[in-house]
Image (cartoon, rainbow, N blue to C red):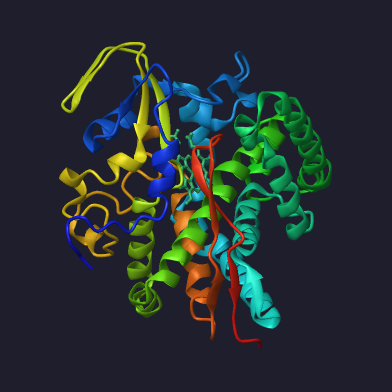
Length: 389
Ligand code: HEM
């Protein structure tokens, strides 16, 4: 699939080019080696939007994203068991397959559907299984979570509208708590299960801290994976050779294609850090107190590391490289995404079914907009049609 040196297969590059910039006062880190060293370093702390959500004194009220050092290590150790390869290949795999079958059957019976909505129902269902949000209707919960996520839109709103945006988000969070989180807590108080909410109850977390954790997984796991699934499908619709190769590949081959798409179209564009010390990496120097904007989109196309034709979609690239195929799209180091294998596997299981549907067509390409709050592209109103069953 290697084309000429200027071939650029990225769909989100122009939009990202208009919106992605290091915040004022932060240094932009786009070289892969320095980016990776920064993310791997224990001298760096979380920074950027939301890091001020960190609650001093009681780490239970701070999402795992914004913890550092020992507190962060303990939290990651505690949640690691929900993300093991065994948990993915047994428990979650069943949810991924059953939910995908149900969603694809629904599409076939209607002959039409909106891909971003279908993908969201899948990602909500899978993350809900991990978190333990399984005591309410999944489709209704997906709508309530969508409403909560208006909170990521408030930075894009005119200043005068932001209080209204925040009020709406607070009301939506309350509905999500009452209708989804509270019944899940009640059920697990009666009988624990193997999920995040049961673990939080064992640790004595109050309701508010449990709600914060559920919202963290909503943004971290449900939203990101929805955007990625729509993006991956869009690439296949526009590239029949890639489509054919995907449906004809085994699991490893399909995952390699998805990782390569994610390298080119990372859902998170920037990761923010603040340096806690003067550090001399082999790749460069970072001064104490410096704010760093790790530019994932740049690092992932650094020719030194990803090889020739960095903007071309080349599913064989991973086999020539020693770096993980998605490069820095899932971050790196202590905060590296714990859900990366969940995301890749659920996308693979779903797309493997979807892309085989007889007569499947993308009759309306998604609208692509930019969400400044989470520094990510958003793909909406992607309409599919297929032969009706
Ligand atoms: C394509 C989908 C996904 C992408 C692109 C993605 C990307 C990322 C990135 C870049 C980070 C690192 C943030 C940082 O270093 O500051 C991260 C962290 C995280 N992700 Fe994901 N993620 C995805 C799916 C998921 C899923 C499915 C889950 C869970 C069900 C999840 C849960 C988390 C959590 C809890 C963290 C915080 C980890 C920490 O701070 O220690 N993610 N993700």
